[in-house]
Length: 285
Ligand SMILES: [Zn+2]
Picture (cartoon, rainbow, N blue to C red):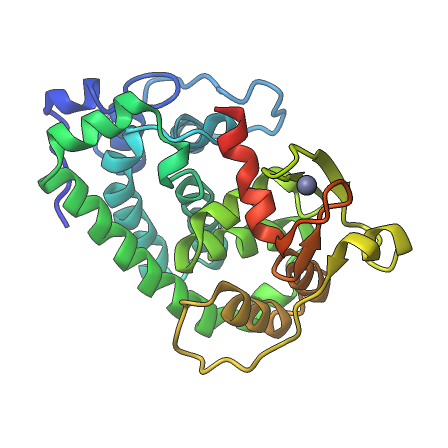
């Protein structure tokens, strides 16, 4: 995995939502002698923070703004892996949790139908080292995430619901299906958009009462299957197992409906619910 030198002019081309992210990356990597004062991009956030933390938040905001994909992610991800390594070496649980959760949600923006034409062209032009390093950084992130999960299972179990939910969603993006993770980010694990391409039925459906008869008319859950503890190919199998083992039963129940069968109330078409949920992104293009 290669880190793009800070002098490279590619930082001007591979930008984030607000432009060049080189300064933020340099700050978090400790490459500046004196950190210039940072202005929060998340203006509504009131918590007092040091400039280095604000630079970190601003970097992440540049990479996931409105859950679009930004080319800066290609350059920043290898650095974020290095940053994660520092947190790991220091045995910093909260630091690792934050970086893994953030990197996962950033990865949930990276799937083909979420990329604009100009980004696909940029990938073609500049493919090679940058994209290779990016892919390598994801591989390292996957290994580190598995290790983190093994080491801290009991601490993760005890996290507050919101922090835990974000981490669990990140986990899906890192180890499995990024587009499905995007669905969970956008739905907040509650309000899922469903689109039927057969009849253009288009609804936002509340998953907070899974026993509601109206809900049960449309959704049938998938039944649990054993996991070999190794393969991450079948999202429903490995992810429901991990969710249960981390005490996230509510998320696991919701997952079984997302990977169960949905029957369209308008035209009667049926299939795996997640496919009807993923359909929505293509519709907004
Ligand atoms: Zn339909």
